[in-house]
Length: 149
Image 1 (cartoon, rainbow, N blue to C red):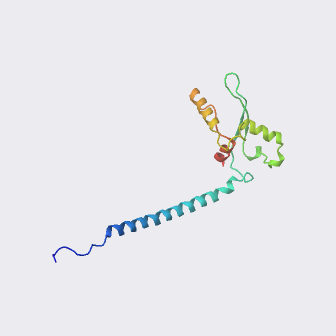
Image 2: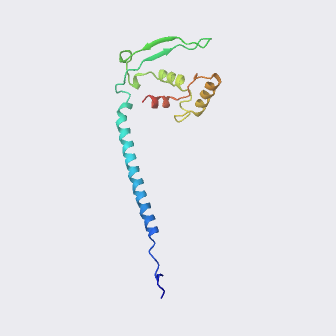
Image 3: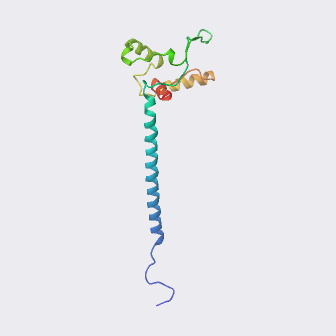
């Protein structure tokens, strides 16, 4: 028997430490995922009431413009200020032809896309690049609702 040499293998501490470290990381990721999910659900739940169209909204001025004339200028036809210039009505009180007119003016391809009109976004981007300024929007009715809500 030689001195200084062991006859049995030493325990592999590195492997045990790696497993503990991996387990600790897994627990930390699970806890952070749970905390993130809880925070996200809480934040969304607190904003749901504001998405209700019947709930009172903050005062926002609405400006109605004329169609652009030959030189591209538009006139201000009306400025609606605050709640006194608006009357909220239910969807059933709006004539179907008015609903169709709003959809045609705001988003002609409303029934063809699923909320994001890539063709409209590319078209608006191309027009903005050509005129070197923001001249056209590519957002859909759905995108406008999400932005305003």
